[in-house]
Each structure stands twice: as structure tokens, then as C-alpha cells.
Amino acid sequence: MNAIQREQAVDIRGDNLGGKSDLGGDSLRCVSLQAPAKINLFLEVLGRRTDGYHDLATIMACVSLYDTLHFQPLPHATGQTELQIVDARRCGGMANCVRPIIPTGEANLAVRAVELVRRRVGIPHSARLSLTKRIPLEAGLGGGSSDAAAALHLANRGWHAGLSMAELTAMAMDLGSDVPYFLQRAPAICLGRGERVGSPLAIPAFPLVLAVPPVGLSTREIFANCQTNKDWDPNRLAPWTSFSSVAAIGSALFNRLQDAATQRTPWIERLLTEFRRERVLGACMTGSGSVCFGLCRTYAHARTVSARLARIGIATYRVHTLSPPILAAA
Ligand code: C5P
Image 1: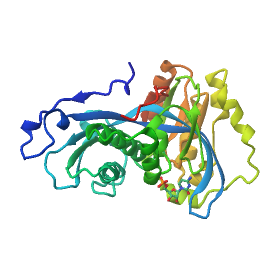
Image 2: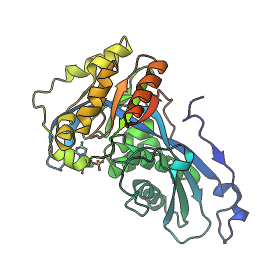
Image 3: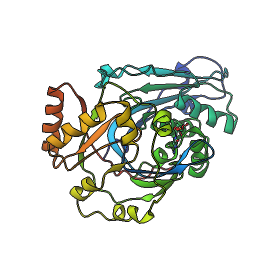
């Protein structure tokens, strides 16, 4: 059983919560979900669009680093989703990076996701979201988008809203380019601005090390300064449908945004150089950065790489790629 399948539902009886409501007993069940980070194994920028976005061809895969979300329907009808951020330092999360403060109001994508579900199905009641944050911000790991997708699933289940995957996907597109991907979570080719998710790819689970520099990067700024490939050949995606080995995946890693990120911080080049020194199968930046990852030959190799980077003051996570079952809508 993997971490996503380990989704738990914690029973909290309605009569412990106080307040009068037609929501009670089982309707007030607290539901929980792990929200994984992703990496981009391949990312090409095809061109700028008139709506301010860029057309992409990217391959995303989820990895075993998770935020945790709990969704608690509340009995009172005051509207508003409360968000409580749990300090991940007490739960094994990493905190040695200087990162921006996580917003707790509607600026938070997970809160916005819950509000979208509430307005869509006309629920007058409040809800409480609790978020244990382990995925670094401004990292290219999609943490905010993954939290938002998990919040859509949770609000749908917690409120028995009965929204289909197609309806959740339409809402996810409004929340952000990566959010539809996290509704499914299987490795996939994503097109458009990233929101058009293809069929699951049979990419095997392999070990990797994420290296987290002390500076984050703004997605908007990196896209604003990136090169585009006008001569894109869609055949470049063909090998990703049938790789024979993890070594072959390591040689095919690519990220067009890496140059723009390298111009903003020396950390990208530094992390990639350290990975190469450790003879990884391939190393690349994920998304718009600033996290870089190295594909390792074995789990023991990943332990060695992670320990060596830690010794020279670089924060790391040892993870593996996930090939989870596709989540059902409700
Ligand atoms: O979709 P999301 O809100 O996550 O994107 C954040 C910003 O990143 C966008 O406002 C845009 O400036 C940039 N972006 C882009 N092309 C994409 C995805 C994001 O230019 N495909």
C-alpha cells in the first residue's frame, strides 16, 4: 500500500463540535489526503500566448514528498474556510530554507479550491482545512497546486458534493496550470499551459535526491525571462512512452527554464555540478526552480548522494517517483 492509498478518514462526531445544523453525525466526518510533490522530467517551452501564459510540452511525475491536508466540515453556516498551517518542523519537514510565509486566506490555493466547491454546490456551511506543509515553496515542486487538487477532492468527499472528475478538472484549470495534473497524479505528458493531461505513462519508480537551495524562484519571473523553441518537434516526446531503463531516462532529462533560472541564481549550476560529481544517472532543475534533482542508481546510492550534499550544507530530500492508481472523483 503506498502513501496515497493510505488515505485515512478520521471520524469526528458532529455532536462534539457544537452549533446547530442539518449537517451532523457522519456528515461531519473529517477526511484526509496526502498531497505529493512533482518533478518535471522534461519541459520544453513552445511559445508565448496572448493570455500571458506559455504553451508547454512537459512530463510530470509525482514523488514521495507530501503535504498533508485534513478537511473538517463545520456545522455552523458562517461561510468562510478556516486554514490552519501545521508546523512541519515537528513532523519531519524541512525548515532550513528561507521561504515566503504561506498565505492563509483566499490567497491560498487550497482555500480557494474549497470555496470553489462550496459555491458550485451551494453549501452554506463552514469548513476547516489543516495543512501540514513539507513541500518547499517557490521550488518548482508544485506544492501549492497539489494542495489545491487535494482540497478539491477532500471538499467533494467531505461535503458529499458528488462532483465528477470532469467537473473537478474544470475547476482545477481555474486554480492553476498544474492543478489538473495533481487530480490524477500518474506520470503523464502535459500540454497547453500544462493543464492538458495525457494518459498515464509507464515510467518505473526510481530513487532520486531533491536538492533545495536557500533561495526560491518566482514562476512568473522565470517564464517572463525564458527562451522558447519555435522549431519544436513533437517526436521528441516519443521515447518517453517506452523507456528501457532508468539510465535512459537520466540521459533524456531536459528543462528549457533552467537557463532563465541559472541567470537569476548561481545555485542551479552549483547543485547540478554537485550531482554530476556524485555520478548520478542524470540531473535537472524541476519546473521553474529552484529545486534540482539527481536520478540515483539505487536507494543506497541516493543515501550516499544525500549525505554528501548534506555535509557541504545543501538541504536534501531522498524520494522516489510514484506510479499511483488514478484517484476517483468521490
Ligand atoms: O498557472 P499558474 O497560476 O500556476 O502560473 C503562474 C504564472 O506562471 C502565470 O501567471 C504565468 O506568468 C506563468 N506561466 C506561464 N506559462 C505557463 C504556466 C505559468 O507563463 N504554462
